Length: 590
Image 1 (cartoon, helix red, strand yellow):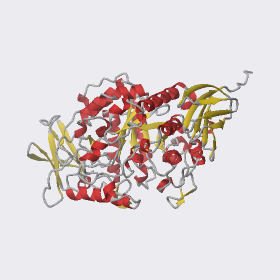
Image 2 (tube, rainbow, N blue to C red):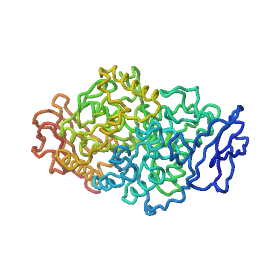
Image 3 (cartoon, rainbow, N blue to C red):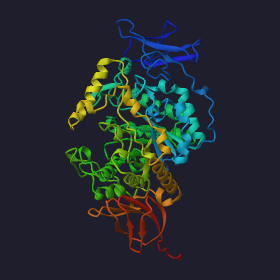
Image 4 (cartoon, rainbow, N blue to C red):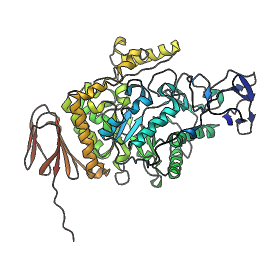
């Protein structure tokens, strides 16, 4: 038996269609309609028809559909989440602190572009040493391939990836290898094709406006059930799919003026679910606000999220290594900005942002907010894919400078994140791609993409066509690269760095006030001290002696063999990173 239940507060009648038969649902005073059908079990296809006073409209997929086997415009299918036989009974979860995260897009991670195919490469991630796999969104969207940020069936797993059971097999396989799984979810907007939510109820509001149009209704009339929609969706991924955490996309676009913000309400609900599930569950926000309140504990007046992405650290590192200064990189690029982000997280912490033309952000209180609550990265899907040609950092930097960048990320006080293929300096780009059948929508996306970059001097023929199948094909990883030079050497460098991070407690210590940085802008050297470890980076083109604050006594890891060290300096080749161990005088016990 299946209970069909749907929220449609503005409808006068609601019916469910099963096997060509239309049966009316029973309505209540709360806008919910329901009916039990004893003969409709798992695997039954169904759709809802709404009568707004002018007769029933066309059948529509369930807003909370768990399975859309014929795409987002087709009927929904009943799924029994309890039927899957999990093999991860020994899994006890993974905390954010101390972890290294690996971000991947299912469709371009491996030939075949499915969750089942991706399982074959999980042992590579285990050998690499990462702790958590972060999946870009898997909620069902229109078309076969895309980034996933235009999802419209938020409770369903994209069928071309393998559907709901494939996601369970993937998570199960990760857990059995000791890997956690974080899932990217999008609650700030829905995609332009297959979004039927507004036909069911006030899921959107004109009270607020976003770059995608009317905002998700989090605080206007009718918003109680919309918020419940978000909370139930988050709980489903964590409970029914055994996901270990959620990355919340662009939370600055969750426009909400209630006294209890949706982010705080979500954090409270997930904490309660974590206690019930008896394993840590994490919430990580992407935010453009530079507001540490997101990750401050609720006891200290914050929202209580577990982490947030740190774009300022990325911008400081990227601009310094590449020399790029356009757009939001304008305020970055000096060693001083990199030092500030390594020790205080945000470059813009209340001061003037030239890109925004105003003051921005607020300071991180280092006494109560540890560095591991911020994710640090040299690359991610946005910072690659939102470039005109999707070029990776490997296309912009020498191999030596790639190693410098990797070292600065992996010895940082933050939770490190790598984007798929970064570990071997992948030469393949990662471009923006879509697969819309509607020719008008396809042309609008194509034109919009070209117009966006025309302002930066790119000709229309230089910007890849998102609808061209070759665009997604170019974006797929070439795994054979990892087995040949120079990629194999970069892969080994990442493995050794991650192993060092795991072995040395200084490197997972999130106390920001213990990170010490010295540098010389003109000579282009940069030294980071983490407890008994130092990273010495020569970003200049020539060999030089870099003064160090403590006499080094041995080498744990070196990116290049050509260096010597004395009592007051380390002499390195140009564009070289060297990690050294040092001895510190210890106070006698009293």
